[in-house]
Length: 334
Image 1 (spheres, rainbow, N blue to C red):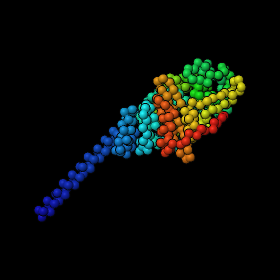
Image 2: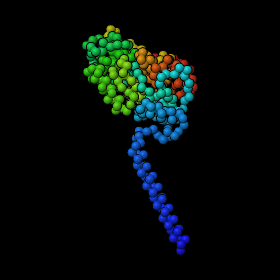
Image 3: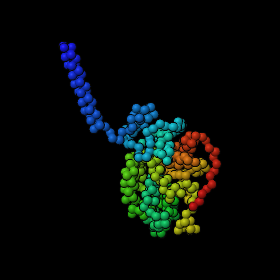
């Protein structure tokens, strides 16, 4: 009888201990869920290999997260060594957004005329292909590179200005488009920043439509997200794949002769279909390039690179799994 009583008492004590342990565990889970970051990286990245942990540390140090659609956390596929690497960059799959190679992808830096990618996106979203506009006085006071032949107060096609902005990186064309859409460069920059916030571009801030201002800043991951949007717009995609174009324009001869600044097009790199270069002293040489071969389309972003053409080629060679022959592409004309 005494043994039975002792066994029953021991069972009750064990039950009470288990209930107390369960209550403590439940309380800990409530506190942990209340204090955890809802935007924290996936647990696979936190507990994964060192390459992933380094990207988690970088995200926390920069207080930024990769934009929606850019899969920064995941296994790297490329192992490319650059003797003098850019300050930041990445290689990504344009279709899926998966990043294949990255160097400081969330580091905020000046981005020069790669700013014009956002200017182009807003232009095609807020204008029609056959739309006309007039060159504003603000556009004629541009600094840096320009188309240089924009006639004051003359009506001209938006599409010609878009080409003049994207191929030779005309700052005057960018300011003319900003004035057409928002009335001034300053108001257009506010529109750019609203669009950046809507896209979840946490690194990005714009001060002008042309990128000449040092305060135009972003990171490689945000520029990759912008490239995916830009290349989905037919009016942008058909322009940036060209090494040369001559759209109709109200100037002597009736056409505006334009040459692209894309280094991959100049190298005749097979499959090149975009996108945009930039240069200022603070930003250095910047480049967002896109190459398509068969069913694969890869993008490369380089910020403050010593040689955008050669570095983009080396990274994309690795992405496509080989070194293609440098066959000069046929120049397409508008």
